[in-house]
Image (cartoon, rainbow, N blue to C red):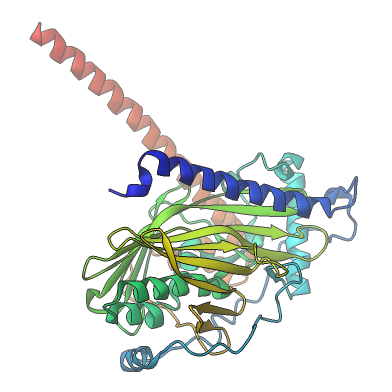
Length: 433
């Protein structure tokens, strides 16, 4: 189906993933080495004691996002053209070594107090990187009243511009460029220090953009946590689909997220673009500057047209780690390039396709005719949104019990079914003889 899955190329992909993981391990070690020798977070009196309170103010949601009509969106798309670069550009929250730092001291203080609390609850093994954090229950005060489903589809915030523009083009290479820019530029809006609520198995989301785009999302696995996304553009001009899976772990002063899964863009004429995601690194968990980085490599592959774009983060000489470079390849030969930083701008072949001061994301509206499994009707989410953290924790624990009970029932039924099938096979074999 996909050439890169065959033979030697598969080994190359495994090698690339191994190198990416090694880069992440090196970053973890560098961040952890910043901690003073003998440092013990549990005995750090500068970290405030944990309190059962909201981590931040939830009243301001997606400020400044566009809420245009269908006609206005299509007009904006038609008028959009890449423009001349105007030099280096980076947001003021860019940290000197790379990534984005958290500017809110109160949020930093609360995150660190929650970290100290988790050490007491789970033990120091959590800091060795040997525990998968996706299997650990965090207190609801560490979270915001949004499901991971909502934060996952936030990635589509620039689709009304770049994907509509791509769908209107007949040039496969230009489409590939626009898809790549849409994905890379979304990091500026989606990367966050605030943890969403883990989705419940079977939880769903349906969102729409005014241009006619429908965004669907469902949690299809609890452990490992797997989210499936399906998006259809106006008049089915494009589709975006695939699944999202991840692992998470922690070091003494860092936390990392290894992104997995596969995602695709597909257009009416059959062009299909597959891509992956970089890994995420959070450092300064207890000491230093709390910051977030996207690290590693990304690929955007169009097998049909023998096109691909390869992007590498954090390897630009004398630049912070949020800067990246990319190669545009045709039949394996470089035909173009891109560069920039996900905190400021993206230039492709000498033209600026994204500038955070000039391009504004679009607000995704959630459908009124949603299912009973909709992410917004969870009792823990609605209670947390009201500000009642204590009751929200109780609601969260109730939902966790339900999930554990359901999982046990499924496992027991699977064993029963397997036993019945074996018995039926024995009977069939006996009757045949």
